[in-house]
Image (cartoon, rainbow, N blue to C red; front, side, top):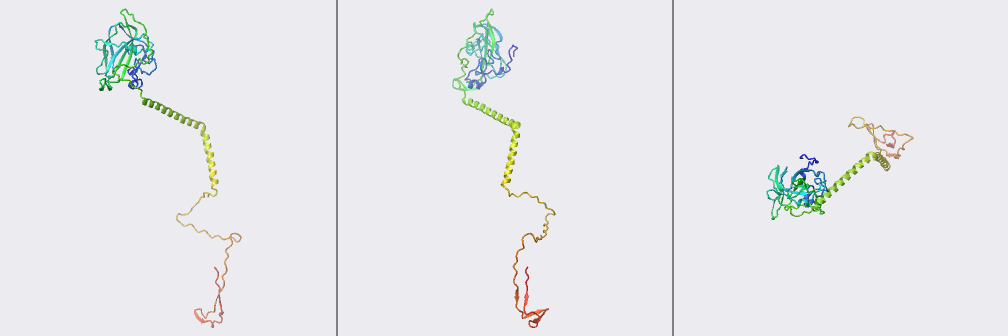
Length: 348
């Protein structure tokens, strides 16, 4: 950003301990010395030996001198600045907060270590005094910005914006501090064995929060759900590939064979099922069909005609008076008429 031969960090405005939730809920308030999330493996990106921590000296000072430090704020979160110094002399190794806490720089006017920037997003400058007699070939200068725009509980029991746990930003630079003759102490700093040396110790940060177990469980649940969904989609795709490239023809043949067996079974189970017949109707609609002609039965074939019993001949006694051609005569006068008439009733 300022022309030094170092890798470009395009997110150098996001060196804030991983964010408020990461710093206070996941890492219990701890933060890497140069603003990296505490849980990241060392060397972290912005520390010595990391991606951006190359040990490039950006400024040289005389011991015990007054220096001007500038900070450009692109987003003002109120709060305050602090500056610390560690005679590290190990450019390829991470610095520790324990070493930095030994040398908290004081403002040149004697008003303490904290600088409170005014409103606005701009460059802020403050004058500080270097520790008396301290020299180093490679000192780590740390900028620490504790924001003040979150609501929290104050030390006196009240609550207001700026109290309690706040978001924090950090950054590091490598400088040299020499004697008047240009010499400097090159004794390396000692890395402590205590893994808690980077714990935040600002007096406004009260208590030590614990890891949110529910958040951790939800995180694991989301991972499990995503994994199962991925496996399900993978199985579906694999099944489609197997079907279209290997099993499609075999499956269709199996369906055809089964369909043939089902049709044979249906015909065998219903042998008396009437076949479909095609009926053709000719002539105008609504007219009664013609009466078919009577069929004559063959003398040699067909059923014999039904047997009809002959009726007996009925006799009528001799009439006493008859009418012949409209003239009534006595039966005696009609001598030519037989004494007894026979009426034959034919059978129908």
